[in-house]
Image 1: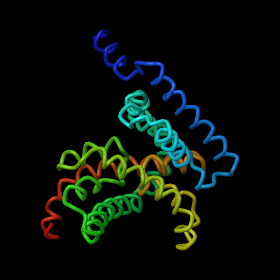
Image 2: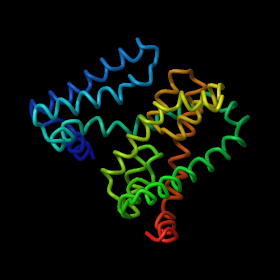
Image 3: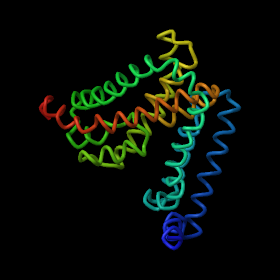
Length: 246
């Protein structure tokens, strides 16, 4: 068992100095981006997920380093996505009384949000001429990546495209949230945080954590249950495409 565990961990470790450099560069850029994000008083345009990705893409393009090589270098970080997602259960457990008190509106919002996210994505993609493969790949975009990738692949989609769609959804959700909340006059931080977790998964939840522990708990439950509901609803997407004539 220990041998298998060692072999698994070793497979996720960088195998050359260049790969170690790319891994350390990614971590270093994240901490720099996080520093400026906090100094900017949480300006949504400076969220590390956006700024660091822009810098990394520019660097990889300039240096001529293929994405496949970079992905292999940072495979260990991908391994941490699962434990990081599970760790969201801690604020959830700490604020169970609040969640129990609000369970009815939370349940209605979760079901409505999950259904609308999938159906709206499929219909909009279809209206703009998206292919069946594209729609199957991006239908689960509002779920966190550990859910959206296997869910999309299970119905015939492309996992890498699902990952890109989920990333874009998270970043754009955080960027647009402030303006949408202002337009709809949503001022309750708990409502805002729950919405961020539902619509922008892990990236939205990371933004909600800055608000406080209660907000983090609501965002975490929204992200987690949206993932569960998405996994249950995603098999109906091919049926929806049949209705649309795709």
